[in-house]
Length: 342
Image (cartoon, rainbow, N blue to C red; front, top):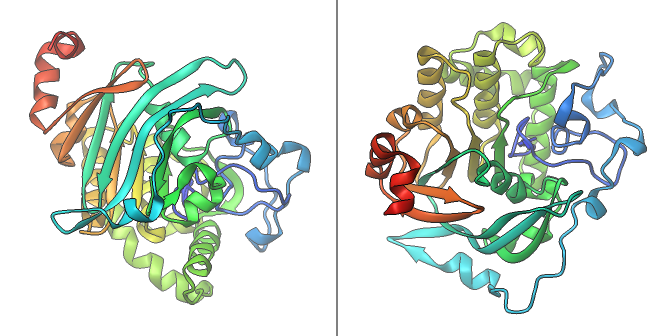
């Protein structure tokens, strides 16, 4: 769903996208709307999420705000169809990023300096690095955050040019992103939000939509996965939630909406050990041979619960080292100076 719905499809609350050209507000672009980047949006209680509308002036003017600067000559060209047919040990190539560069839209400060990353189906990857190394920026660029402009390189997702998609299209195609600090939405219940987002993804996939009663049966089975009680569905999205409850709610959205690629941006921040175990258990329960997870974290403790096959160290806007889980142990002992020296 979402930046992301980071999730409607799939990137979810969780970011899914920012604002579409229409002034209608829907779950697939709700959370990445600029309003939600710094504050909550006061929305009156309504019968249906579909009736929520926001002033056009609040939109980030979608495509124009998602500016992608002309890629410089020499950037790697990728044949989308050929890329998606690539396989490794029978697993399809899900995401291929080559020489990706990006700047902050307003200041034009360069943040990404040639990121390269390949993710196949069924893989768990973790990106680690010091503050300011570009980890979160990279995740936001992947979901189409309007605060950043792509200046070079390519990103192919399931054989399609990710950088040419609107944020909501990225979400509906199967990308989910969780927020570091999930926002609250007064007046919109979890049940209404999830139902609307779920149906948006169903439409995209050409599958039947679910009415409120049918959807309740679907979502009820997901609550145990994240150790949440049924009354969470009647509460407004993240309103009055503790930090742990908000993170659980993010993973509930992921469980309900599904995603081919879940980007978890510091999902462990602000969690005690019990809450972290609940979130990690839920994420592990959602892993299949066909979907993948890209985690961003500072700490090894998350990796003790969700075991990545690959760990990438990011520095100065690019991935400088890739290894297995032992790389995290080395980092814990030696710090980033040890990585740089190596």
